[in-house]
Image (tube, rainbow, N blue to C red; front, top):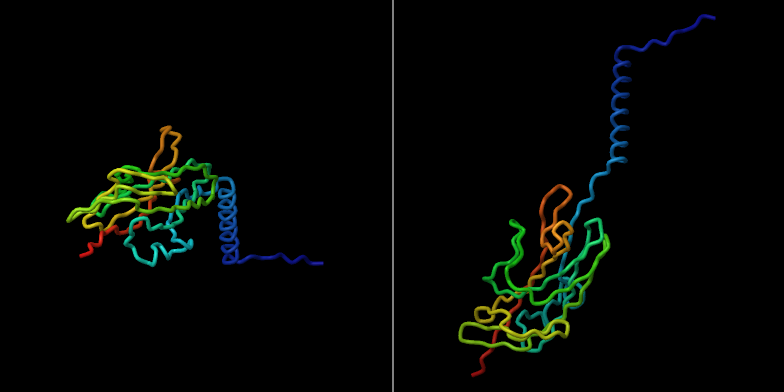
Length: 215
């Protein structure tokens, strides 16, 4: 019996070589990804929800002007996606419209004093929901300014000149997410991502505390 030899054309040989090279590259890539997975993106997230736990009903009767002893209920949220256990502190600050808020460019917190804070250890991918119930208990007013001098947060009373706003307009709560940094053995506002970038996270919500003059 005469044997028939299988002949491969140059074009077919070219395709075989190219396929072999592609197969090798793909296999090598899969092996590399398996052995050296891409670093997980690291971040914190935070938010403020209204009385019903939604992005609505932030103010009683949808009126951002808050009267004395008018209870306001929010839910604060913090999410840990840093890939590890984190000690997190949520710092609360009370500002007016002219005071400096946290800076996302320089990664610096607001220089305003912290009036309240919450702290908790969060495991990786844990969401922390925090009831935030507050009311203005006292305030003083002049012709041009209103100063909040008494504030209740979660049944804790705060006193002093907490913040002053022009005619009582545009007060704001700032909520800054801080975490314990093992490299400095201290709390830090900014964190370093897997690609070496600094990031911060904070939220704010505005309200008024104007005084109505009865004539």
